[in-house]
Image (cartoon, rainbow, N blue to C red; front, side):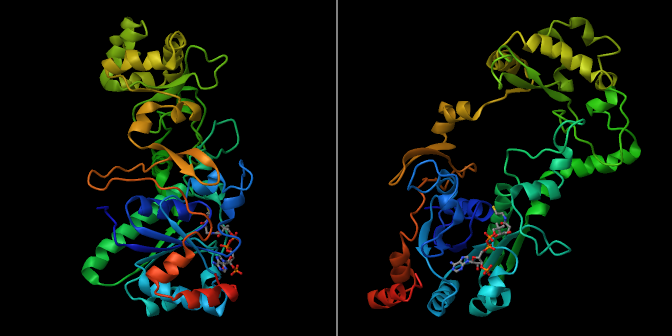
Length: 415
Ligand code: COA
């Protein structure tokens, strides 16, 4: 038994944000039926192609555990099928550009009329306000949600991050909204509208930076390295390079081999509770009691010196040796792992966090499995569906259409 077994999802999502959400629902056992335009499908199927003629990794890695049906929802026949699906399903998930569903004839009022128990979940770039009609992609959300202005080095331009916090991050937010609404429906009997704007999702993940914005009123942010460098703060939370965002100062430091290996680095946190251990490890036992270094406050204006000294030590060890030496001493450190190292990491394979999947068009490939582990709802990662692979199956088994009716729809170009 899977956690969401029996929950039927009308998956109207495309590109990344929506599909990551419905993929999670699929991992948890929901029946995810992805509705795609006949002959076209989700645009990502044919984007960033690496194997000619096969669905791209972009698509396959975001659409596991789903069925695919083609349906032209702009034809009369297609609209009739969609109405039937809305009546049959528990959740409808979509991330069309603002207004697209209205133009299709399926706004929230119409959906509610068809199925008052329906949970209608949407990703949009922005919530209600001046930008609500805008189309948005990942990096726009990172910029509009406060991530880019606070990422990068002080002297450089704003930076976007490789973690897809705008798309996959918002997909996660939406997924939580959906299961929460399903839980409420158990008691209220009613569906509801769930909205996850990408700007809000990114801002939520940048919460600590809004914290720092408000702390600026009380004076310079002492844990930022610019404090120790006597560089005045401006009006907004600055970019902080690799400074840690919390109360325990940390940095990315070079390790043995850094001259040739771009990932020979470690993150090193000078957690106050284990400061004496840090001093012993780096060969500075005199810092344990010295008034300039012994307390976190004394160290704040000397963080550059402190981390430069620690780096002299980390440069003599590989990033894994730093782990092996520091972990037993409770010093929090972490190697900078490349995608190659992650792909080859046996423990991630064992836990199902990285999974090898077989696909009829492209053969074997790696994907990221379910990052959330439920002890009573095991995840089996199934390959992504081919375009329209399950059209007939869904039309007949879920919606009750006869073979003749399906043939007529096909002739009319509705599926
Ligand atoms: N049958 C018929 N038409 C279909 C269809 C189907 N099965 N599925 C989609 N369409 C139509 C839509 O109705 C829309 O038509 P219209 O504009 O004539 O009304 C059209 O396809 C295009 O949809 P749209 O969502 O506008 O796609 P786009 O490629 O132009 O824009 C985004 C892509 C991602 C920018 C946009 O969808 C968006 O801003 N989404 C919300 C935010 C978001 O999720 N962004 C992150 C994506 S990772």
